[in-house]
Image (cartoon, rainbow over all chains, first blue to last red; front, side, top):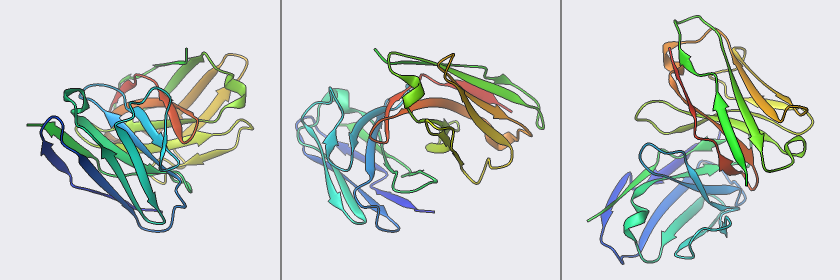
Length: 107
Length: 113
């Protein structure tokens, strides 16, 4: 199975800050990586697939990059509505696996 | 508009069975692969099972042999038959539509064992 390691586990930043979350896969996943946002008590929301393609309707302040085993999610200018937990997920092979999540808090 | 509506969750004893359903609308269900993803209380997301448009299936090791995913394209409905439930199966179960991995999620149904 492919293990996904996310860092940091939590981060606190101010409105307007640039925020970066990192996800490392235990093997090459060939950009078959997605990012999700989950707010407290809600279902996840899909943000990015194929490492860097935004899902329809996702604000352009979100971006993804990476290749091989290293991937990043960047929020270019943090907004109050971005307070949530973010998960990466590989879909290169079954079983699909998720990172443990990064909780983003607004200072 | 894509809609996924889960049902069938509840409180059961260890060893019991439960069948979850997911009613889908707003897209061509028969052409679309689907998954179940669960989330234990206070924990992260765990992929459980997937089924493709041809009926091919995959399972997480934690549920293999106990859970069965299926679909009824005539009813636009996805199912998850869960047998021999364990305390550690307690979670919110989400139905998820495939599209660049997952593009839409249901609101979830709670299973408490």
